[in-house]
Length: 340
Image 1: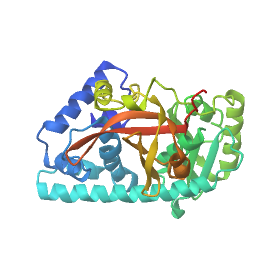
Image 2: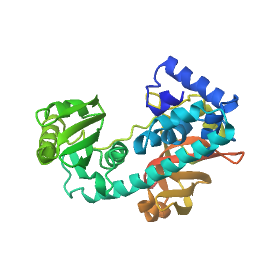
Image 3: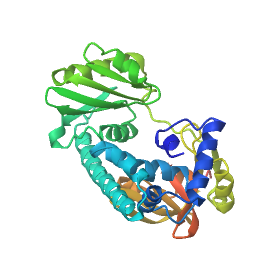
Image 4: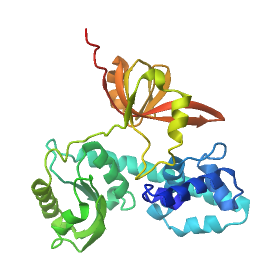
């Protein structure tokens, strides 16, 4: 279950959904080895039933942090450990590595964003020396963040002397490997799949690579392909958002690639109690329901001006033994005025 979700395997098949559903049940109720129990504990997952998001956003990153920053076999040692005390120490070390990974990632996202030109090309390539924080273990995560922000294929490149290592994250309308195919004469090696790929290139060829990739996208993708869209599954009023709706939608879980949580249009939500969390996220009340919008701190004043039409997922938030309904907001716009 952990591997299926953390490696973004398609949950559109009954077999994969069953693997994850049964795995989540076992993780939530079973007795675990000392290593797995310690990993769940440092991930803050000791009290409530686990959800697929917990595997992708809490357990997976801690497992991956070892390989990104040090040695991946630290995870194997943790899962093999039979002494609970030693397992707790090893799990805390993984948790610390994950905190370091997040700090490196945040700094690198800021550095990469500072390189974005005012007029974005069809394919964006940003780069920097590994010695200055462009760590090859996190370039893929940073590429994902930039791709999500600008809705263009992005390559983030770690320069290591005469050689550079890059990670590509693309939008669904632009095939990452085919784009790299068009530049294979410049590359030492490359590979991947339609939305994620990697490559190694001589550093001196980086400017040519960026220009060639941008030209390929200009030829093979339209302006519409590079325009972000949200596909909404249904609409409801704020009054319909409650435990009954959340419970009904939860029956469609586990959610992930190929089986995303339904995205609803919630029209005319009254907004109050807007605050910023961790300088990045927005927390507010939408017609009496808790709402969270990750990475949207810059929109605080616009949100506070409300009312809003929201594109949001309805979920059950579990915290310290309490369950509340929460809207996870993906986008928002000022509510349409009622016709006179």
